[in-house]
Length: 363
Image (tube, rainbow, N blue to C red; front, side, top):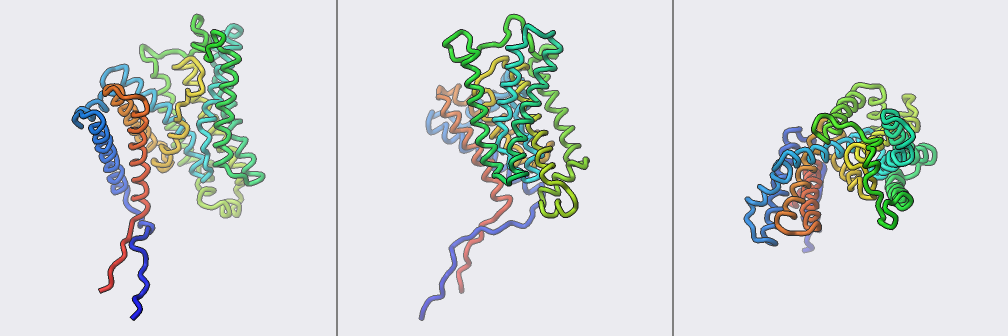
């Protein structure tokens, strides 16, 4: 007798919608597993006990007041860029260009500080540089939206390509403005006069960035959930055909939303140059434009949820860096630990959305 052809041993099926509590439980478990794996990897390479690894991760962010405020800065910048990604992703416009939009904001801010630092009064200069960063970021983001709305180009590839263009523009102007000549860097901009530097609130260098992030979170939450534009985003994201049928101009929504996303990214660039770093480098964004994609996605494009996912990623990555430093390992080891953490955080979303069904043996 011929045996019946058997199906695959296992296959993936869409999971029924699970509750928020169950989804949070899966994510919490993934975090615990990520930390355990990081501890095991560190133990195998250093021989130190896992408890000391966990302690080092905690102390990397909360071991001193300065470390705490650096963590707040990292969270705030990451949150601001993630908030910029939210509206575009809500309408299923896959903007992967946050990194480039931030770098264009960085370039616009540095340009104003260098070229107008001795020509404008301090308050006017601050307004001009922030306005320039916002406008530059908005225009940079609107370009792929314009092509998408008119010629249906692939926004993922387009925005990704523009990241590299923006980075090379920054590299070009660093050579133009390098100080001292031949150094390949521009150093601290207006170090003596502090022209264009954003004011410091009290004794805390990073508090202004934190406040801006909180205000933007509230504004974006209201915008996305209670405004007409937020409603149009949701409709376009569900179905472009339905949106057009009920009279929504989809192309206009694309451009308007990307103008908003780019403007917020440009503001993030201004906060880094004029608020905290006071310089311009090709690595100033530090990959946060790409990390923000994960933050926005894991939070399901909810601005409030992005606070927690931003904190989680910034905290674990800061801890990974501290582990590498304390145990005498190089920066590559920190990247390995960060990759393990991100792998688990992304992988858990698979188990929230899907399940594996194994073949049942016939009796």
